[in-house]
Image 1 (spheres, helix red, strand yellow):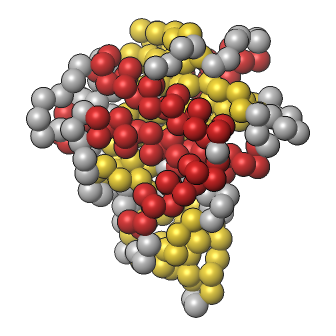
Image 2: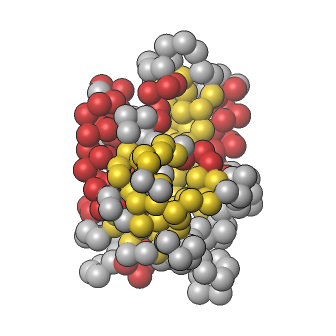
Image 3: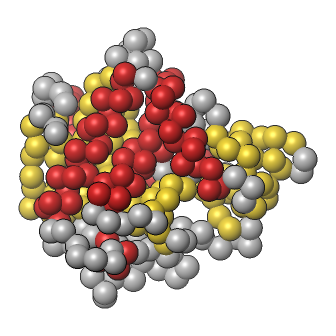
Amino acid sequence: MFSGGVHVFDSVGSTNDWALEQIRQGRALPFACIADHQSHGRGRRGRRWLSPAGSNIYLSLAWRFSLQASRLGVFSLAQGGAVVRALNRIGIHDAWLKWPNDVMIGERKIAGILVETIDVRSDSCTVVAGIGLNYSMPGNISPGEGMNWTDVAHAARGGVPGRNELAAILLDEAAELCQRFQASVDAVLAEVESVVEVLKGRAVELRLGDGRKFTGTVLGINGLGELRAEVNGTERIFNSADVSLRGRDGSRAAGEPC
Ligand code: BTN
């Protein structure tokens, strides 16, 4: 059960931006914020995160770790694992984690994670973990050609809990993950490695921010949460900051709803 402050907004620019600003102003940690609507929701790699009102869950959790920032490499993937556990708790058992931090049902994206660090010191750092979980995306929203997404309303086979109830479960799992991460990064890494198993041996296309593309086969992740892939017979390491993963034919294996 999360015991920090929780701030609920009808509308905010971005829950991550609000949390980062609060940290700069010295708000006590940990805290969380949840919004019904974001006017400037942000995704990874500078993308927009479409955040219509009354539809989805937009949550940010701010947490201070007594850890070197270099230990955070696997944190966003681990937060994806927390989303998978929240979905399990409401009866959705076919969600999986796609490196670096997409939560998928089949080949459709149901949630994304945006982790940002602030106040980084030699032995501690503060993290804002932003989670966007599609709950019931309005039918008239078209994320764009080739962008495959789904939501809880479609993924759930039985009854769907209310959005607030699910947000509370999500916060509970996200905060629990932070506690476990502080206690043992290595234990969390081992859990995440087993979840990422599903990607091993998959043929993928890796696209770098500068436009370069590689095709290769996924080998796994390393201790920093980076992707290991075999490219032209050589193992290469890819950092989540500048790579997106696609099917070998270049199709978007996952599309962000933005
Ligand atoms: C991605 O897959 O690109 C990450 C999407 C993260 C979206 C969430 S919604 C709550 C928080 N506030 C934001 O502006 N972004 C994150």
